[in-house]
Length: 581
Image (cartoon, rainbow, N blue to C red; front, side, top):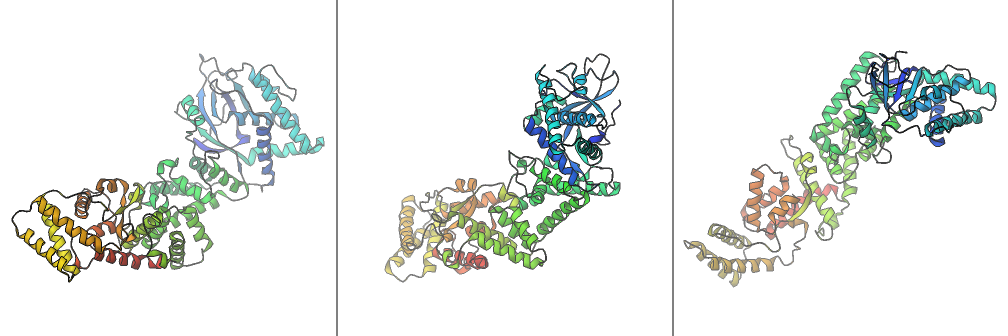
């Protein structure tokens, strides 16, 4: 009884095509399916009766390893020396139940199973299975469960078809459908170690992923496929996998690390199946595709949907405006499935209309009114401030005239983000005469731009001029002037909230921690060093610390002044106003 090997290690195989010798090795537990599992399988198979002729119903996968019995091998006992047999690595409960089903159909006048089954731990199991009946055999625990399962199969059929002739007719129909419409996903372990594969499967690290199972459903040869079409689909599958390995594309679509998926294409398959990956239902996506096939959709139809969804995602990625708006939504916790649903519900609309729908979604997610905007602050609206500043950065990149630069969501998602106070409430002191002189020069420039017509300011300005005219500046001189200038500026800034949006910038957590409570010029120098070293500093944060938003005539580099804050707030408001409610 030489088995007919599948043409590929991963293929669809009709149950009726199972042939040859199947061996359950000792490292597996014995047969343990009870009434619930047996009847669940029968009910699934019964659903096949509702399918039109030609449509396939697919069962869960079976993993095997093809071996040849040598003259010195004591097992499998039923396999002649020199014959090929299959070591059952995964799916032995299902294969044994199918064997029992064939035995019952044979009792009703249909053909016997074309394959032989034996258990290493049960010498004589091959003969027992050939003679199994509904009489419960308690010789050992395996025979008990096998004979009980046979009795459940008999009871299930007798309940549905009490009349013997009807039952025989049903048996004939079942035998035909098992041969032509019910498939198994067949995996040949090839050169893999069987025990290692079995261990990984049962430890929850199964190499047979949703993606592999769906690929077998959609791309495997079912006997009716066009070889050229199958080759085209296989090439498209590889192209999708390759594209999703580009982090720029991946992190545009998902904030999740790729490692959280067994394969990256699972993201796309989950999207189509509307499935969420859970520990309790790890094959939900595969089961959805299987159900679609069972309900009449063809392999080609389902594959076309996969390819069309991929090309749609790619189209979004290539469009800078759509890229930035979807990227912001995903970065703030929106699910790709919601974006896709928004698109599908408005499929007849133009690209510009879809962009407006995305902008409306951003507006709802941001959830800030024009009136609320002026009152946003770190202590009461931290998440809204962070989302606002991310939107400000993303849109600022989108508005760059050369039209090629993109906000790097791949880099963004690899960092943890926080809000940095531009002007620290309690800045660390400066050290060194060069830093003191630079600080005092900017202090003088700041007082000049304020144009305060009072005696105290005039005196302080004169003192700054004298200190800067000296060849050296002592620590005591600097400390006294720094305190006087700071007191004056703090009085002027007393009405400004240190936690307001115009004193906040977006930075990664580790860079934020590195800056600490340093003074504004110290932060600027450190950010310049990090920027030169290749660290990602968001565009608008760079602009803030280099006074991009402040008019040239009012610029000074040592302080974050009222003028700086006002200019910064006005630019943020101008950019994000279309997204305020």
